[in-house]
Image (cartoon, rainbow, N blue to C red; front, top):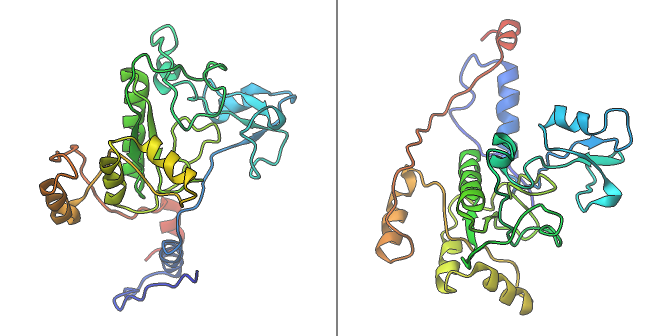
Length: 270
């Protein structure tokens, strides 16, 4: 696939500095590529002098330096003997509030690796509630909203919850051992919601059937965290045809701004 820059007859404005032009060109060019797998893994030395202290310093308490030979979390980005683990693997609230104040361990979900419950990373849900799958969408605030939903469902309500990126091999799961942070395939994936609706809300069974029939991966989800003003017509249409429930505001306010460090403005004034 060839990526091309989109021409803009009003760009650049007269008097813009070369530095800002370069930054704008990079942002414009990179926005034409599809989502890539991003990982926050940090290399560490399991038998080094710092050990877990290094991971705690880089992340927070709860992160451990684990040998790549002992975990499925190894990655080509981790060039040392080990990698720092996800400090929230067993839950965000338990980590922040302390096990004595929040005793629950999060419930397991379909994205967890084999043996996660036996290792104490999660527990099986106490009641039979079908897993909720949340779209990550392809911008940060929606991804953060999806994480908040996943945390509340998994840790407070005891409902299994996963994140749908639209890709079979890209994760945005908050509890991902590999600390994956992948942008979703598209902004508004209404067809993922339709897939869940048409298959009795069972996204796990939907994917199992597609895999059994050697069909390509197709997204399936129950929740779309955010929908902005430009989607009002689409939302109204999908509410009317019964695809989605009536929507409500989240209370968030959007603002687009550019910021640069003070020293940059001093060295390269406009």
